[in-house]
Amino acid sequence: MSAIEVRGLSKSFGGREVLRGVDLDVATGEVAIVLGPSGSGKSTLLRCINHLERPDAGYVRVNGDVIGYREARRRDGETVLRELPPREVAGQRRRIGMVFQQFNLFPHFTVLENLTEGQLAGGISPDEAAERGRALLARVGLAGREKSYPSHLSGGQQQRVAIARTLALQPDVVLFDEPTSALDPELVGEVLAVIRDLAESGMTLVVVTHEIGFARDVADTVIFMDDGRIVETGRPEQIFAAAEHPRTREFLAAVR
Image 1 (tube, rainbow, N blue to C red):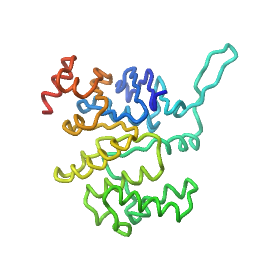
Image 2: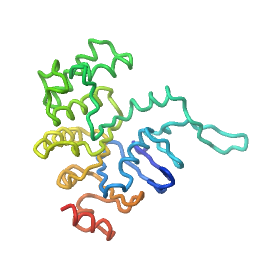
Image 3: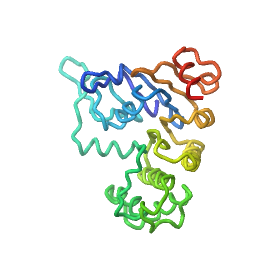
Image 4: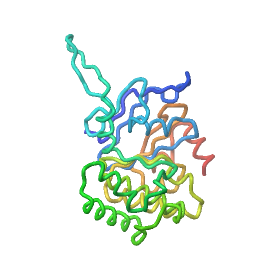
C-alpha cells in the first residue's frame, strides 16, 4: 500500500485548470521531490492532498483512507464518495503535516507554546506536550529557545519551529510547500539540514522546492510538473542526468 495515492486529481480556479487528472504514488518512507515552474500546480497538488483545497475530480488516499470523504455503496453496487463533515476532515489533517512558505506561527505565543497548542487540542496532557515540544526543538537545533517569541527569531529559526510544530502532531506524512522560498539565501541551509535529517530518518515526505542540489541529494523520486500535469517521474540520477521529456530538460537547464 502506498502512503499517498492520488488518482485522477483535477482542480480549477475561475475556469482555469490548475490540475489535470494527476496520478501519483508515494511509498511509505519515500522522499518525493516535486519540481516545476511557477503556476504548474505543485502547491495546489499539496493542498489537495491535505484537503485544504477540495478537488473537482479524483481522490487522495493516505495510508488507505480517502481524505475528505467516506466511501459508500449505492443500491446498484457502485461505490461513491460522500464528503466528510469538517470535524472529521480536521482529524484526518492531523495525520498529514504541512509546512508552508510562510511560517504561520502565533506571534503572541512563545516558541514552546506554538508547539504545544495543537497537541493540547488533540488531547495530549500539558506535561507530555511540553516534553515532546522540547525534544523536537532540540532536534531542529533550537534547544534553549523555548521562551523566545517568533519576532525574536530569524526566518530560518522560525521555519525550523514551524517544522517542529508539524512534527509534534506525529503525522504519517509531511508535505513541504517551498519551505525555503521566504528565507534569505544564507538561512536556507539550516532549514534544508532539518529536512535532510527527516528524510534520513525514514519519514514519508513530499517536498516542493527549487533547490536542485538538495533534490539531487535527498530524493528517492523526482516529479516534474508543468501546466497541471506530471510530465515525468524518475530516480534523481535519471531525471537530472538524462531526463526523457524535452520540457523537463528545458526547465532543468534554466534553473541550473
